[in-house]
Length: 261
Image 1: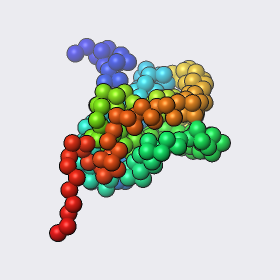
Image 2: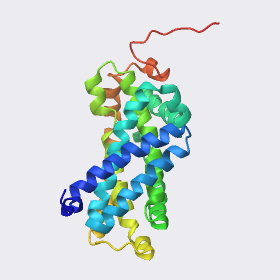
Image 3: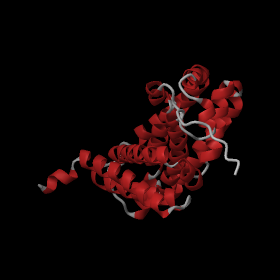
């Protein structure tokens, strides 16, 4: 293979995707809820650093996006078949699932408390940015791994309990959540630049202003979409899921059994 091939951006995206898959598999096999995001973040950061130093900040952000895609696909697949282990090994999995299923059952979403929702989003964005600045994106990637894991665990619950699988496939990951993930990835890549210079990682940081601006705009768009689409999307999604089965963390076609022994 020509050496120049390994320096083209698509190879960094493929490498990052595989880092996402491998990081999750390693962390899952360790069987510890702390070790899981650490393993994911470690390999994600490696992909980010290599892309940063060779093809620049923009492609480094894209690499983290592909890392997130890789870790999400493999985690949803694993979570589908291991609901009990998922609750034990994934931080906030059970609590997040309960809150989201409560939203689907009652229809009472973030649009009913816009100020509180906006404050929560601002607080999360500040913490994420601070972690990216202080750790050259390592800490923020770890925070992203935790977020992806419990969100993907919830998605696996919906798919397991789906009565209309196609609808759930399209709606389980809320559109505003997708916007948030991309926005945070852009913000993390931009915020990492000062510490990376201190650490001696010299790369083309010319894209960082655009990444920062796009990420900030995405955070605002995330909030707007969440407040405006939460109710209609929730109704559509609830209509495609056996909510009783989802609450019990079981399949929609699995008969309910009582264990009285």
